Structures are given as structure tokens and as C-alpha cells.
Amino acid sequence: MMGVEKIQTIPGGMDSVLYYVMLFHIVIFVHFVGGIFIAIGLYTRLADIIQIPLIVGALLLVNDPVRMVISGGKIDLILSIVVLALLVVFLVFGSGKMSIDYKKRFKNHGLT
Image 1 (spheres, helix red, strand yellow):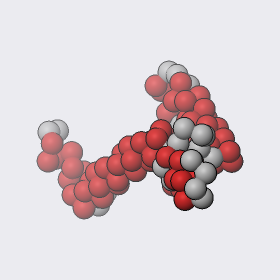
Image 2 (image 1 turned 120 degrees about the vertical axis):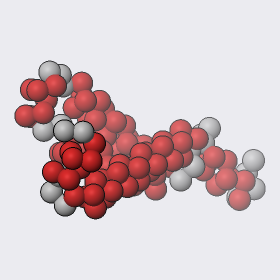
Image 3 (image 1 turned 135 degrees about the vertical axis):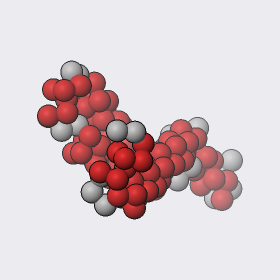
């Protein structure tokens, strides 16, 4: 089977494929923008709150035991757990002193 025939065998047909393609692009965009915000320290807690459900979804959907046996490794599971733990740390403690949020907060109070 080639391209179009494979798409026609998927339940829901072309509409289902377009839905998943759009969903994947949205998730990639949210991860990319959220990662940049966390890295520079801009709206860190908000970015964490948005990222945590995506990582939990990765833990529940992508890292199922059947697929891990087939692919032969648990590195995706370990990486997802580490990223989730780091997101929780940033959610609890916030961004550090070198973040944009910290500089904006103290500039507004006239302390810089």
C-alpha cells in the first residue's frame, strides 16, 4: 500500500490524519515556546503549568509498556520523568536571579 491507500484505511480517513497532524504541530510549538520561556526565565511558572500536562501525557500515552518492549528501551520513560521532575522544581521554586522575571520584579520596585 502506498500513501493514499494507507490514509484511507485509517478509521476516520483524511479528517483523522489532519487532526493528528495539527495536534502534533501544536504540541511541538507549545514545547518549543515553553522551553524558551523557561530557559530565559520569562513567565516560568505559567510555562511550567502548560508543559506539565504535556509531559504527563507523554508518560501515559507514549511510554506504554507494550511499546517499550517493542522499541527495546526505557530511555524515553527516564527522560520524561526527569523533565517532569525539573518542571515541578521550577514550578515550586520559580526562576532564579538571572531571569527576566526577577529583573522585572525588582525594577518595578526600584531596587535595581
